[in-house]
Length: 316
Image 1 (tube, rainbow, N blue to C red):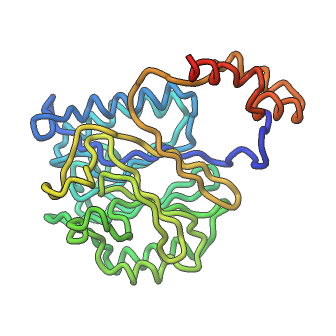
Image 2 (cartoon, rainbow, N blue to C red; image 1 turned 60 degrees about the horizontal axis):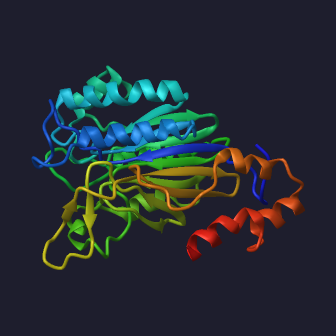
């Protein structure tokens, strides 16, 4: 593709999904939310975009009750699309997930290094030189998060050798404050200082999380943290009368664009709505074919022919 600005194309692209909360059978979450349909819409929208991400990462709460059939539905829905797009599929455990059915349905094994299905489901992926480390922050029987000392030791060993394009950590419980969703502090990741001691000064370039059902961004141990919202339901963060108020609206996924010196996180709403502005891709093709200065005059100049339609439609 012709470079239109100062930045090169990203070296890697990751589609960041979170919290689908699938249920066995055709049941709706809370009797209201069709979580399977929402996820199917999100996957179809990603495939229509022709983006072809290098990896698709799901940061936890894949199944609301940890039911084997829910994981099988998830696998059967997502895996064929990932194969068509040529994308590596990366799963992460969440607090609603159960390790044994998760490991059996999605990996066909008994857990990491044969350690058993009840062991933390930590894994490492090499995505064309970009290392993605999956950390299982789930605590069996509870909704808060934790990392065992053995997991931190394992992570320290993994990070001791830098990867070609650095490392991204994917986990469910993000190590960030939740000022607009304060009850979630009860369900946060425990002992974040110990985790920070392992991450700080390594080649970790970003941390991807979920759990909150709303997008948020922060830093942790000097590393950017990005939390994807959810494909099932989303938090209403401004309702003073209801705590942890979920709404069946505004679902989204994130696209992570990896550059040599930064990550760019773009939130993409799920759904189809009438367009109120825009130019056809066929018409925009002429922009690609122009010299830079002509391209700038046509596309940037407010009074150009290219921008005349916007002016005319707003004056109508």
